[in-house]
Amino acid sequence: MKKTQLTFPEEFAKRISLNYPFAESLMDALNSVPPISIRLHPEKKMEDLSFKSKMPWAKNGIYLTERPTFTLDPYFHGGVYYPQEAGSMYLSTILENIELKEDPIVLDACAAPGGKTSILAEKLNNEGVLISNEIIKSRATILMETTTKWGYCNQIITSNDTKSFRKTRIKFDLIVIDAPCSGEGMFRKDPKARKEWSIANCKLCVTRQKEILENLLPSLNDAGYLVYSTCTFNPAENEELLLHFINAFDLEICKMPQYDGMMQDKEGIGQYFFPGFAESEGFYCAVLKKKGHTEKDKLKISTNSTVAAPNFIKKSKTELKYYQHENFIYACHPLTRHISALLKENLFVLKTGIMISQQFGKKHVPQIDSALSPFIETDFEQLTLTKDLALKYLKGETFDLASTPGIKEILYKKIPIGFVNHLGNRFNNLYPYEWRIKMKIT
Image 1: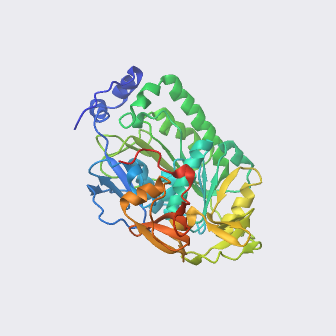
Image 2: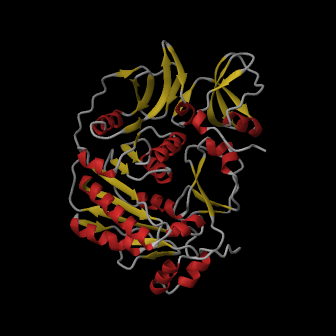
Image 3: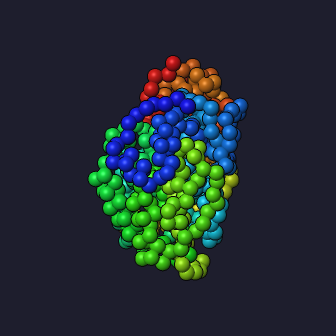
């Protein structure tokens, strides 16, 4: 492999050497070229897919032979795939090996940029409710973009400190915490992570991780699951940290399938992915279950205040109800709306379900969600663009596009990517301004 030959923080190298007999191999791997991996959307198909190999622990995960410029691929903007670190896709295996109750309520507590949340959405497949939270507003915006492109209808996006969840009346059947950490597993992929590493920062991360667990574990339902993960090799942020919470919150360790290259931590709680041994960046994950038994909640869910679907909705592939908030129409399941209302009592909710249209009098202007969700089908005329024109559209440009006046759905190959309002001799580009390609297209 090609070596980048970057140096490591002295204290990091010392700790690794003292704790791991394979320290030299690990540090060699951290100076090699990282693998490139993506996860495919199960409901959207890519033509002429070329890849190196499939991922053993994620059925929709694949390795690429080389890194493309994702920004210049209309398939990426259409939500056909998501670039994601391979180890973090192990969440797919975890979800196949735990038993969630019917219509579970799931919290992804540190969800941006959205990779793990999209795996959770696939598993739930529009059943139950998925709350995806990100405290940092700028990252929450990225999270909303990712979830919109993935297009599932049972999601609620929030932006809150995890301590705010103490105030909710909701118990979660699954809590996923991809905790902010010292980032040692990113030393190969992101050289800046090496410069930011320090013992003081590691200790700060442990303090923050403890706070997150203390904030959220009281809201874990009996027989509910905690999935805890980091991208660091530091035991103090992983298995050593979890030991205390296993005892304090009456949790039991759940053993998960192990694949070649994975290594169990020294306490027998979770698993490590070490570069050079597993084809991934550095990653740690553990699954814990709260002891006890939970009955199915008997929630009184009202379907009042529903409105008719906009007339451009041809059909939906999942059961949806339509609601109006201000001048927007959105769609979700009644349970999703019910949980959103409970969250709004104490939390800041950014988005519930999928945005269908913005209403101006009797006129409905479709929102990007209506194009990108594979579970919504519109009856707008479809216009298919070449790759060059699709990129111009995604950049927010206008160009010659023959059509009759009216709203048109724009496709790249067979994948919807957005809308235009055609005026007969020109069109208005309706692709969201904040999503538009900023880099130069050559």
